[in-house]
Length: 72
Image (cartoon, rainbow, N blue to C red):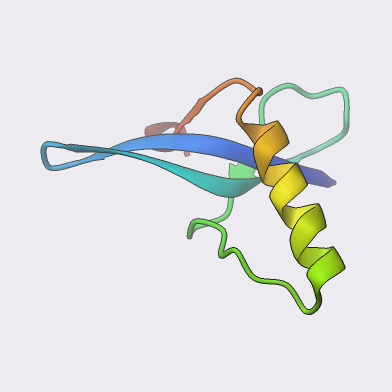
């Protein structure tokens, strides 16, 4: 199983929410994730390099197709 970050759209009441979640795929060839993390991703790291890497991966997620939370 592989994972990457994806933007997930949801609606709570009258408020639209866009949050970054980790999406888990069966393989790199699957375009639809099997499941997503239950909570949005925190922006923390154990060191500066890890934080930079996480932020780069989050930025890449903005270019990928949007996921709907109701699909999970």
